[in-house]
Length: 381
Image 1 (cartoon, helix red, strand yellow):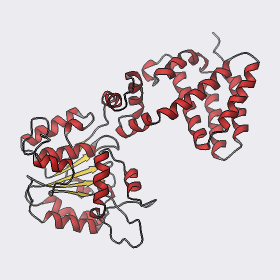
Image 2 (tube, one colour; image 1 turned 90 degrees about the vertical axis):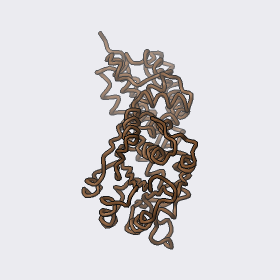
Image 3 (cartoon, rainbow, N blue to C red; image 1 turned 45 degrees about the vertical axis):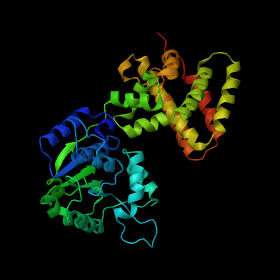
């Protein structure tokens, strides 16, 4: 992977390439960052930069023999260790090499891989992945051999916090005094579960959340979103590439939520008597949809109430709305004010609780709709 393919993290990229050019390559480094920060992507790009035969000041060349093999994650001097478990009782003592083909495929498709997606990919159901003593033995065997053709032998371990204490203790001496030209790259989401003796032997590379500008640019580039909508989604993602893509991927469903929310709210604050019949009909329409959809709709409604209340209080920098949501809220926000916001949240929470308890959806949403009529009124001057 090239540094140019890593989303954001420009300062950290410069720091890593500068250190490598000056020969300050620590033999054991810990890329520590929350899920979605790009710590795995950075570690892969750093490994390729270290292996590249013709690196520039800012990136690997991408064209040499080493880069081509690193791009395919098939360089003979690149080794992986990651949490695994057996999916069948007949599979004993599982190690990473047993899952290497799936790992390469998933990582090439998405270097921002999540732990849950990985476990689903190897079908271990509800089991917890771990890095075992058998894995530690395999690592020691691999690194005892000379490099085949690269500048380094690279051992990239994903989620070392899943390594059990026995395995970690086995590797301590190797991490402290590795064979020549051996590079350990640990990629972790949390250091709390790692042995302090392991932590003390690594150089920390702290990976911060991705800046919202970089996330917005990614959403515009990958999905063709309007800049305003991309900016709003990037704020909601809170520095995570994974979360930004997840939120953006809900666009069709989110539009459905908005259409139903807007219809329900317009009927709620309109004063004509005939709207009550339409309001009940709208509630009954929502009641025909699936329970998971209904729960997500109520959560969406809570978010919209929050955004409209903040807009009403004129704290624009804290409002995360764009497009149709923003246009609708410009007219709707005066109806969401200190006199009703807490009651509205309570009623939405109550409906959410009842849906979760498999209550009668028609009764739940009709009751909610009739309460909205009483609550959604503009604040009198």
